[in-house]
Length: 72
Image 1 (tube, rainbow, N blue to C red):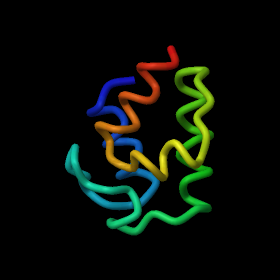
Image 2: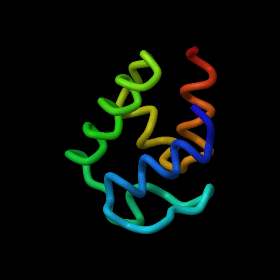
Image 3: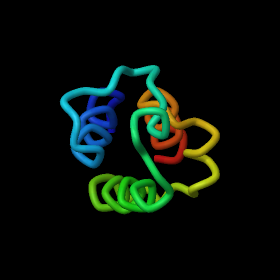
Image 4: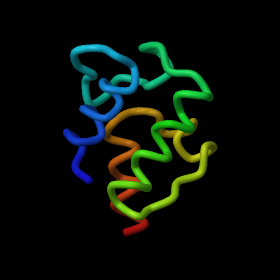
């Protein structure tokens, strides 16, 4: 899953037009419930299961991409 795909997925979940590569999921409206949605959609698309704490520590599209890339 590319950085751009992560940003697009986050934007869809947050119902916004765009999220920058260095923008925090939580600073643009994300919540723990929406984080679970993000984790589920990433798992559906990639087969990779991420932990909430990992995304909380790296909440940007760049950070999530690196997490997915590091696991797959």
